Length: 237
Image (cartoon, rainbow, N blue to C red; front, side):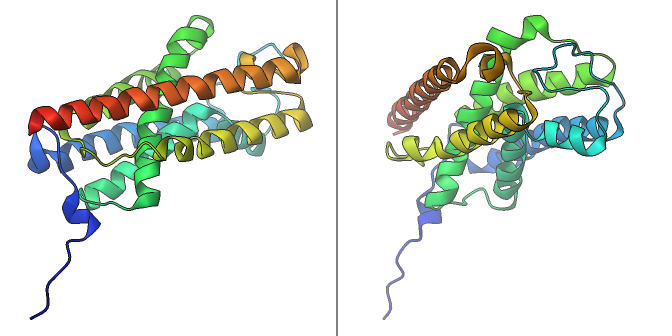
């Protein structure tokens, strides 16, 4: 008689609302991220609201064409985090028990990156934001609603104990790739997505120190989430 070995997917456990609530909540999260990023992309392609930016060292040249606007769109960390959330959440809608090493790291990335997006925006960027028309709506979804929904849904349905401490440095790979892309592109076009990445104004050394500080902040956030995950798992038992 053959004994079936449990797969990794069967080891997935859920939060206090359980597996039954997982798929609907994952769906809500996927829709929030997809709507915010999708509408923002459409507005960008169409050039519906020309940039009001007057600083040539920051992205948003109002005279560039659609291709330039698209490249700008994909240079923002906000878009990377929201697109990743949309992709991973749609995958969880299809299979709430999805697991595996790479997926686990990307799942941690969704919580880490969207949290950094929300916190950095509120702490550094919100005061100088100049949104008009539908940009007010996309800004709300990208920087406020989706970050909150992602964290709340993870707290309510998990999955629990899916992340490991070794996943934290692996989860930094994608943000580091984004930083390299933004800095390399910035060095070519002399325009950057955020003021704290502006090498032309602050110098490469200062920007690298800032990036390292944000990376350390990301490690702390990830550690808090893993610790919270372990605490909530113990309470469930």
